Length: 511
Ligand SMILES: Nc1ncnc2c1ncn2[C@@H]1O[C@H](COP(=O)(O)OP(=O)(O)OP(=O)(O)O)[C@@H](O)[C@H]1O
Image (cartoon, rainbow, N blue to C red):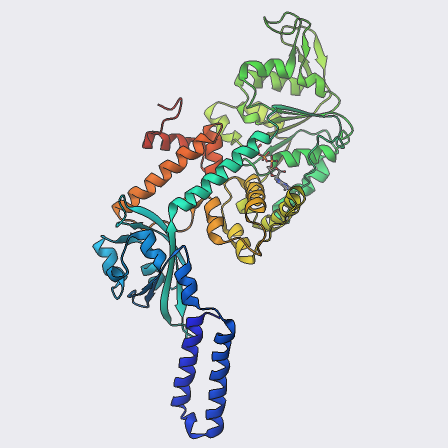
């Protein structure tokens, strides 16, 4: 039990006994004394001097009464803020914040107002230059539910930034080790190259998708899989292939966005001898020919150039293609699956995607909702990834119920891929205890979108802008593209591009 609360309970116990005049009844008085002795014994047994503990913490601790009058600050508070204890002790936090010479922001006043735990930024004005801190204010209540004290712990936001950078480095490391190929060829569904990932989830949407797959997979009907980046489109395509009658034949996956537009046509359709200079003189079959008899996944179909869309439409309609520079039609027998994270209807309206191609592809539409709309999948996927990474890294991550609540409440801009990365990172960097501390979680999740916006003075706003600028610069350094940086920060590429201009960040091609 919290020691302050426990002492307060003993005091209240004595007050109640005095009110009831227990001392007039020897039995009641004895019972009271025995109960107090038991309480004191508990403190003694615990053997922990909580003041020594708080004084040894590296985080700043700032404790006020219910009005916000400062009762205590620990030595780390002075070390981290340059504020002498006598400058704040006995003073009202509202006065200190209003004056604005020691610090601004912070969570004390909001905890008093809202009577719940609050996360806020605070700017230490006594530091030169002023330094932004990340504060967590917690209310303490008596047993009647009345607020008695507020305890605020804080640390410089740079420590969170360091954590974020560490996580950014981890992500680029993963990217580097991932297969960077634009085309993947699987000989059959049991080939070692096929990912072992199966469709995990407990949500109603995933169950519906699973039902559609069960019905559509054994047919040759074209499937169009849509959904944000990282929702699991490729996993669904794999599942369709596994459950299809073509699972013992070739499955080719081609990423239409990563192959340069001028090469995509010859990659897909192949070319005849001497079709263009530099090409293999004997001609080359394209991916359509190579996939014939099997399945072809056209990933990122929304990024296919318009002129190729016409050719693709013809191939789908006629089930025939002609190599670049060739005249002889080649018969195809392909099961097509297309996937995209673009809004194809919007692209049609903008004139960058052909409507007739859309209808050709959209025979069996499968839309995968973002993870934040499939909260029931989060626990199942988390457990799945904990198992996967326990096996890979020989250590097991344990999450508390509170950690899981943070997971369920988070908006997962990078969807399942982000959840997978977070679980891998925590397995490596934060396993070995029965929970992950909340600060570590907030450090690697996208805190810029947290539900605790900074309450701000001009200086605070400026500091937050600085933080945002630094964070974007750091993430850009570790990213392959604006889109990649956007995905890491949970915003789209155009937001990153706008911020680059707004903050004058030096990034090639944006000036
Ligand atoms: N339902 C799921 N069950 C198990 N693993 C999943 C599930 N959904 C996604 N994943 C995992 O999440 C990661 C991202 O999934 P995937 O590559 O299929 O997403 P995507 O929608 O194709 O992304 P992008 O549009 O960026 O290519 C993969 O490692 C995949 O194994």
